Amino acid sequence: MDKTAVLMKWIFIYLCLLHCCFCARILEEPKVHFLNAGDTVENNNPGLKTYCHTATSKYLAHIWRTMTMHLDINSDSYTLYDGKTPEEIHQKHNDNQKSWNFNLFDTKKHKQLKINPFEDTCIGVYIESSNESGYITNLTETRINVWRLTMMIIGIIIFWYAYILSRNSLFYYACGIIFGVTLSIILLTYMAGKLIPRGKVMYLMFAVPMSLYLAQVLWENTHLIIVQYREWVMWYILVTSLISFVICYRFGPVTNKRTKQIIQWFLQLIGLAMVYNSSHFYEASFSCCIILVLLYNFPKAALERGKRQTVFPEKRKLLNEDQYYQEGIRHTRKSLKELQNYCSSPECNPWKTVLRLKDPIRFAKFMEGEPHLSKYEIEEHEEEVSKILEKDEYTDDDDDDY
Image 1 (cartoon, one colour):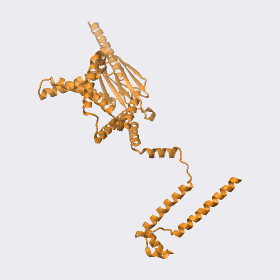
Image 2 (cartoon, rainbow, N blue to C red):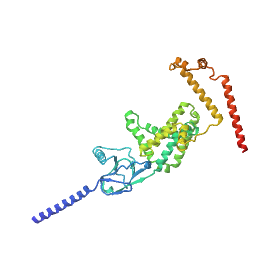
Image 3 (cartoon, rainbow, N blue to C red):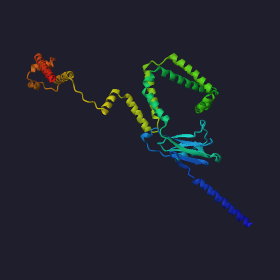
Image 4 (cartoon, rainbow, N blue to C red):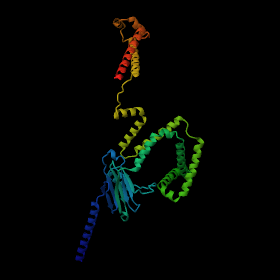
């Protein structure tokens, strides 16, 4: 009997040690994984696992850089948490475990998670059942995201050509048709909500959440709906587009200038929003918005002039005889006008000025508006100029003979 008790005691000790070793193995397994681009982590144990990515340096060449975390799992019985640090992930998980949580709008589990490469980001994956705990996590990097680049280009085009688009009839009809098709879907959702029993409490409890739920289900299953009900979708879009076109044609394009200006500003705001959200490098995208606004509002002539003077400095041009004559007349008139203004101002001392003049009477006539040159001086000047010109022509003829 004593031997049997001793044997049972040793068996119990062995089982306890085996259980402790198994628990220690689980506890020693890292629950936080720091991933870089191209890393892959496989998990086969239940519980909360946190996958983090450390922020990378910001360079202008990485303006369209994106990162995606792929979750290769066959089951949908998992919960996702996002945050900046592992502590935040654990806090959200603990809060979720302590409270009763029913997410009506969680219609689809995401298996591709977009990550900001320039910020510290953590994703938590919690699986409760050990039978469905196997999954693989992979982090991929896209140096130039074509969709974000296209989004920036479209935003720039919308901003730059907002003035033309706001006054284009074709754009008016296209926007009217798109708005009409979208509004018809909203009206159908509203009419479905009207089928709910009347009453404020019942409406708030069922109609609004159910409408939002249906809208999200339609949005997430758009591709499936188009494939399976292609003919119905085509006829629906065709009929609603025709009705929208008739309504737009009935009222006609916008004619009020202020309304056109408001449409232009609205389009420009949409363009700037697209440019700003086209990159996770928000400082660079915001700088692009500022540059775009400055280029649009800065005078084009001054911009081209500054560009030419910087890259190709303009050579100094010599004046011909006619230009020299006109320039002399212009500057002479300007100087005489400045002299008259100065002598008429309180800053001028008239007595000192009279003492310095050789002919005060002539100066007084000049101040009253008479020419500053007499007829004799003008004739003498023209005679001297004609002599100089004749002499130059004679000299040119002699040079041609040689």
